[in-house]
Image (cartoon, rainbow, N blue to C red; front, side, top):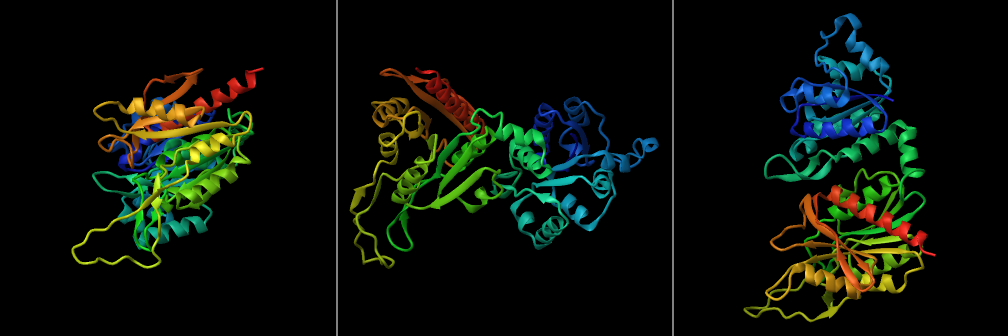
Length: 418
């Protein structure tokens, strides 16, 4: 497929390099058309080396071949990633003052826009109206991710990960390489995978709750990786920010829940359909013995005493109810103390829970919750011996790919066992 990748001038332009590589791996011919500002972030030699084609920004480049018209006419798919508020406004207004905007104006191919900008820009009424205009004209707009932006702030406006952009674009173009990769040739093709994400909350009253700091990012990354591997995915989301659930790839259905008992019910239901269950949600171990129907009031100088009761162990229940050949993966967020390391506690949990795999991360000193990068080990068993795999460092997408690879290997082991 002849694909044009437009790159606008934002800090997220570096991710375009990964988009090019992924498209080339899928057999696409990629013509990169950056804006002049984009080249302030990533140089033309990088784009040329990855795409194998020359890079132009101006309508007066290669005039003899009428480049500003020819590129759009020959394109079978146009992706703009990142798309800044400025380039979105130009496209909405029909402006064609550089090679990229001229290409968009001349092409009859599907156009996919992946916005990236600060939250205030994304929520500005002008941008909101421009996005609505693009969608009305049939341009496919991928919702931005929620997360760390340039500088210390975070929120909606982050450019989605390259694989997400490519999957969305190929689905929009109805490309056979996407359909084949997800439905026919993926290592989990034909499998049904249920994944829990986020953190459960236990109500104290209509206002307050007991909860934890899990964002759900890891579970969502796992769902995307499983879908990319060909699985039909059922995502059970516990108190996950709605922005993280927007723009999920095809093949993922979402059930939103709040409490541990609701999670238990949802996962038990999913287990009847699932070939594999991945319990990445952070589950509250305790809940209040009583929940007040009205907001609790302060009472003078006295403190508040809460009576807590233990919640059901959802993972143990799933292991007890497993079908033959069903793969179950647990997660353990642990901290160490003076007597034992975090890994010691993770190994002990793995022995007690009875899952096939346990993904362990050390959350001491705020190392995991809410961050985009993480460090994990995947524990498995050889008889009674617990085996700790090598550390996996990287983004939660990187970790998710390793987990899905491990699940695929578990299926291979099950199928090869007489």
